Amino acid sequence: MGAKLLIAEEGTITGSLEDANLDAAVIKQAGSFLESRDETRAFSVAEFAPDLSDWTNARVLFERLQPEPHLVICGAGHVGAALAKLASLLGYTTTLIDDRAEFVLREQFPDERIKLVATENWTNAVREAVRSGHGVSIAIVTRGHNEDEQCMRALLELELDYVGLIGSKRRTSIVLERLRDAGASESFRGRVRAPIGLDIAAVTPEEVALSILAEIVAERRGGSGGSLSAWRRVEERKKGKGERGKGKAREGGGT
Image 1 (cartoon, rainbow, N blue to C red):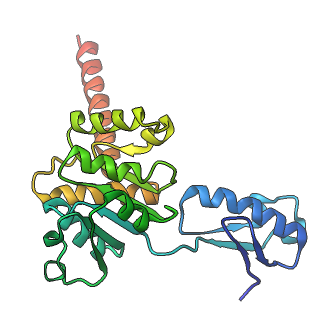
Image 2: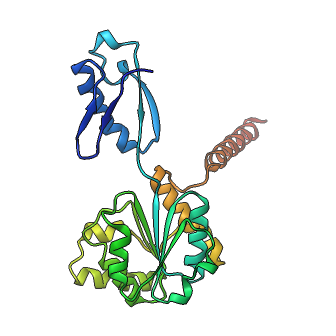
Image 3: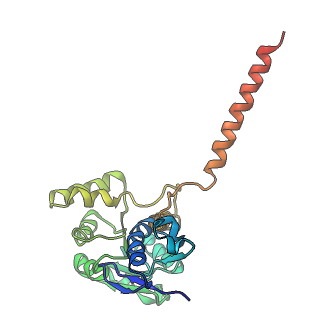
């Protein structure tokens, strides 16, 4: 087991790799690693610090240390309930909030990993659930404009991993316009996924929940949300065009 160096988000350094120059190079490379969203990745020192000749053959393993991802769901209707169950299944710490106590009863959600919150004040409940916002995604799937807006107002000064708002283009635009009028920055409004989710032509609440969670996972992992087989169809189209081109050439060349 080699030496370890722990780099906290706020910049605190613990430990050493027993070489000040190597420490400095690794700390710099850690910034690039964190931006990549990889969980772990090994680099040879030559890749990021070729001038450190004494360490050319050494390898450094970078590992992201973070708490379990946390999903806060505002609204325990059909979609919110399905989303809470699916998120918990995928290992997310899950908080489900609603202002209707009968919608967040434990008998409806026997999974103890789902925290249930009945509230009379959406804004306060959301602030309590998301706290600093670090490592937190939030899906706002309430039953109306007013509830949506109350939830969104709790997020204005926070940097969350993901913010999504359910509804039609018209409904979500109304909420975002109200937030703009209330002073929400363009940067904040630009980060809101509205309408929420990936386009999988979802119909049932469970399908909608799947489209939402797929987008959240893609955002967390740095995925595109596209089809993994898209390249094959592109290659087949290129191949087809090439074959048609050859056929035309042969036809044109005959006498």
